[in-house]
Every structure is written in structure tokens, then in C-alpha cells.
Image 1 (cartoon, rainbow, N blue to C red):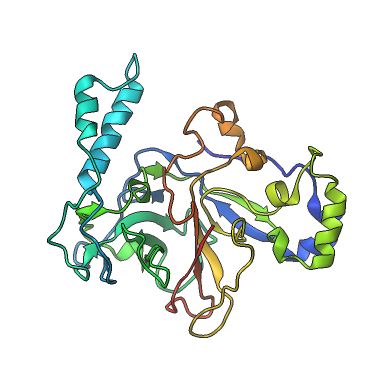
Image 2 (cartoon, rainbow, N blue to C red; image 1 turned 60 degrees about the horizontal axis):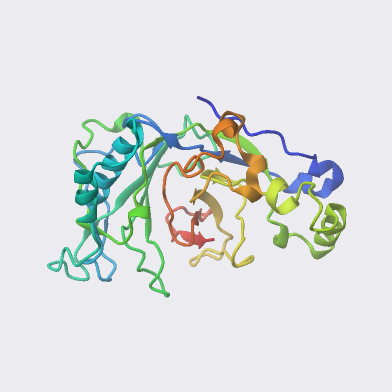
Length: 330
């Protein structure tokens, strides 16, 4: 089923014409639970990966022997999904006992801090489905991976992301059984399998990145905080959820410099992985097709992913896609 974002509550460009020059197109991916194949764009689905090409691995030094067993994370999800679908709902005593045994622990003490561990397959995007993907000259298929541990970067609390591009038509025999890590840091780093329903929408810059004079005019236009009218920051600027392109919502840290560490060019948002597709503040972005079930528990978290602080934007150097990625966690 396609997903359709309602029109914005007001025409913000009519109220502030200078915003028209700043508009960007973002592609909302609208991941929803399903059974994608290797030939589909997906989040958490199987990848069209060449059988003769090494799978991406993380070799950055960090502890990797303690956490949750990967197979147990998937098994618990299987049990809970089965319990959700049966009537009456709920786990059986035997299922509850099995789940109780799935605990965090030092399950792989044999792993050294620099042993290569398979990256998690996060998403694959075909350009036919997402025309807004940048043309790097390296193919029509983008595949996104991250490490199952958030122990990287200067803070030692950051994710590690890798991108791979392929020409889908050149892939002969796809890999049948991709490698998986023995242990991961958090279950929320493994996406549920979701099909995508891409939709292009218009975005405008995050409020705090605007010229201060324009910020003041928007503040006055919105009126007091207790008014229930549309709010620029929630309703008229950046869309929530998984998306390609658009603008970054700097909701936690405020705007930060985002320049390429090699050439200094400002990085461009490539993919945003979001914990929620909407929340009470961004309810106006809820697609028409989801509004009837919008209050059903879990309806707004189809991928069950929460990476970093909950919303991770992967940014790419527009001058050279081989330059280091930028990661923004909000």
C-alpha cells in the first residue's frame, strides 16, 4: 500500500517567500513490516550481494565479546510475533521460559578487540525506487551497513557505518547466506524486515539554522506556545521517519558544523534512520493510510531501530563520495 503524507497545514512559503529558495526534496521511505526479496528496496531485508565479494566487516578496535547473541534476538522476535498473532494473545509458559534465558552476557570471550566481525545489513535502496539517491557513478544499488556495537569515534559511543554501491544488473550469483555477528551490543540495532513505500515531500531548513531575523518573524507569526496552530519546527520544516535527502533536524544538539574532514565541503544528508515514523509533536506528518491505526502500540516504530540517540543521519561528501562519511545522531 502506498503512503501519502497530508499537505502541510499552511503554505509556509506564502507566509515567508524567502523559504522557497531553500526548499529541498526528501524521499520518505515509509518502511512497513513485510517480506522483501533481494530485488526489493528494503530496511532489514535480504541484500542482493555478490557471492564472490567479501562481506563488510568491522575491524575498529573495541570490545566485542559481550552483549546479546544474534540468533537469540531473532528467536525472541519470532516468539513474540507468534504470540501477538494468536488468539488469545500472549506467550505460553514455555515461550516465556525460553525468552527468560535470552540474556546479555559475555557470550563470545574468544573474540579479540580487533577481530573482524560481520556488519549488520541495514538497508538497500534501488535508484528506480529512490531517484533522489546521489549519482556516484558506482551503481544503481546502495547498501547500508553498520556495526552491531556503538563503540566507535572519539567518544567511544558512536556507530560505525559503511556504504556499498553496486550495479544491480552485473550481479550474477547472489550470496545465499550472509554472515552475521555472534554478539551485538543492543537488539535495537537489528532492523525488522520492512518493505518500503517511497514518497517525495518538500522540506525546509531546521528552524535554528535560519537567519535570526527570519527566526524572529516566524516566532511572531506562530504566536504564543499555548496556541494550537501549526509550528514551523514540527509541521513545516523536516519530516520525521526514515528518509533520503532533505534537511537534518538538530532537535537535541542544535546546529553543528558538518564539513568533510578531507576537503572541507559541507556534507549532504544521504539517509536518515529514525526511531519513530511520527510522534505526538509530528503527528501532522502521519500518512493518511496510517491514521486509523496511528495510536496502536508500535504502529509508529515499524523497524524497531534505535541507533545513537534515536535518529541517525548519514551524510556524504558531494565532491567525492569516497571521502569519510559524516554521522549526526539526534
